[in-house]
Amino acid sequence: MIRITSWADYLETVGRFEQWAFRGQPGPDLPLLPSLARRLVRHAPDRALWPLRERRAMRIFRRKAHVHVNDGAVLDDDLRVLAMMQHHGAATRLLDFTKSPFVAAFFALEASAGTSVVHALNTPSLWGRAPAFDRSLRREVIDPRRPGHYERYFIDNRHPLVWFGEPSEMDRRLVAQSGLFVLPGVLDTPLDRLLEHYAEEGETLLQTIVLAPEVRVQAMRELYRMNITYATLWPDLDGLARSINQELESIWQPLIDDFQRPPESTP
Image 1 (cartoon, rainbow, N blue to C red):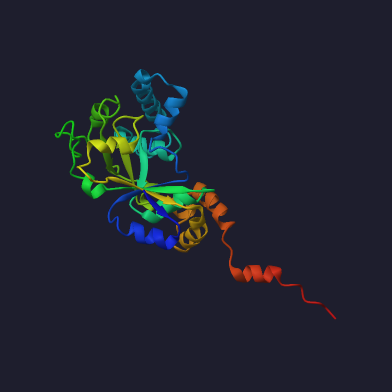
Image 2: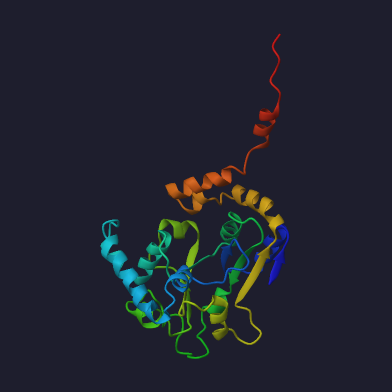
């Protein structure tokens, strides 16, 4: 765990994690579990029925989403279906990561009122790894972009696997965020525990960067100058509307000076 107390410290720290992937979270105590796990644990605790529920959710989405997409063929691709579901508000198995430590910092800090975190995933080391319990299950073998592999390796929650990557075609939000997804093979096991099956002795595959509350003001100002806002990360009307919250915090000093200047007296 690395504790950060300034934006300069953050820049120096993430500079050491070249080509890693990052995930920002507004609270330090949130486990690295996908939204589907959190929802099922809370509202459908019978774990034996989780595969049935996940299959049904994907089937219903496919059956109805065709009226909203131009190319119905995208609904034949499991990972693209999950990406569409995730980006439109459905609970899925996907964990959102980004190749940009600055995008991750934005998502960690934007809604934070205290300490926040950025998780850094060692994707260069993880790329060629297979889990210790079965060395044949390499990344390319379990690739969910290949037909039938999501069903075979993930949906039954039997294999404590980790896969990361992008869909064969990326939507606008994923492109804007330099995003990628991490898929856990077991829903209710946090990512850090799943990675224990992949780590070599003494190796860190997941590093947690803890951002102190005082980092936020300078960080959000610098991210605004870098044009990292909801308007650019969610390039649609939803993103534009969300970005207005950030505009409330950013104002040019000349405007403040003009507002505070007393009106000129008239003779």
